[in-house]
Image (cartoon, rainbow over all chains, first blue to last red; front, side, top):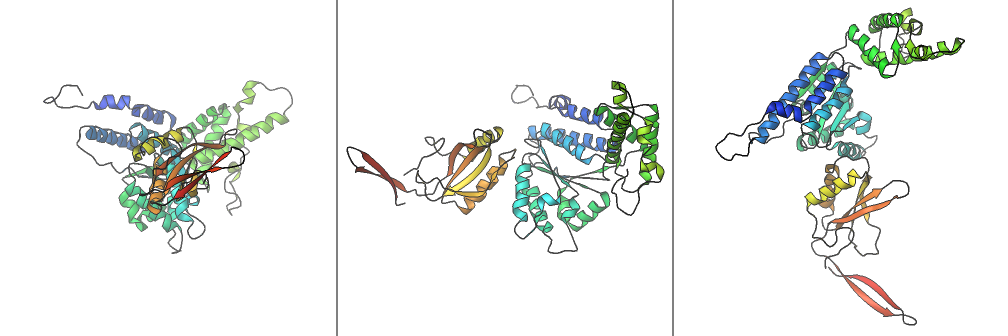
Length: 307
Length: 130
């Protein structure tokens, strides 16, 4: 806007706003750091555009209401919901919709008490900590237990609803969980449905994406696959997907942790000195021994994850 | 009589906006915030009652202001103060304390001077009336 008073129309340069507010930085970061998740990135870009325009409208005095920013993230485990929530907190902070931009991540246990009168203080405590930032409620549907009408979760829900309505300037609530259970949760609690404006779905990763994720995870820890190791990993991913308790990127992370364990054992039991290359290479021999290759884990529930 | 103690005691009462700014400062130093109230503002009365628990790990002053509002609702006719506590090893003490609420009519303090042995003089402060 120029300093000219009166008859010149005030203008807002959206592109400049986009650059200077740091929104671009966050979106670039998102693009760079997160593999796959194209629809999610698309939705976040759209949301960012909406918020930028809304901010411009407010600057010109066209809108006064704070838009409803509460969101729900639905998707299977390990699809990056928490990571994206962190980025979202940064984004909202840059745009000035939350004052501090920190993320408080909670589950039912942090909100609901164990006896009468315990829930309200507990929920309020969490809400106070989340003020000025984003409250991320993982597996939010556990708050609502329809089979037990005396469940204290209901109390937490009521407080949450009230704060989501009255303190829209102060915090943004993001609820996350499996898609089908979230749908049922919203159906049973219409109050939430109407207060949540943005529903973002997180698709499962493809095998190819998981392969790239595994490579970048290893790189972050200063390791790398050799050719055999990479192929074994690709096969591992394909087989692992068919087996129970598959949790996308989280399963990959666990598999890599175990591969590192095997690598350490392999190097330790071999004789002779090792060089830096050997110390940081994951080979086929570190991945193949996994139980995933020999028909998978026993499904009777003794083990939660594949070995 | 207007009772003064703690920080800013020679300034007019802080507005909510000013209180909020002070709390932001407190939080920026990573001190814990406590809200206390009493109906007995005698300077020797160090035992004010706590409103809820001290608040650690807050990021934004809004959380404190919410508690303060609640406390005012329940004890609007009392003295309320905000304390900032530094838990760093070596300090472990209150770094800041200021009054944020006072009753409509305040008691006054009367000072008694007593001659004691030799030429000693003893002072006693007594709260009187409202």
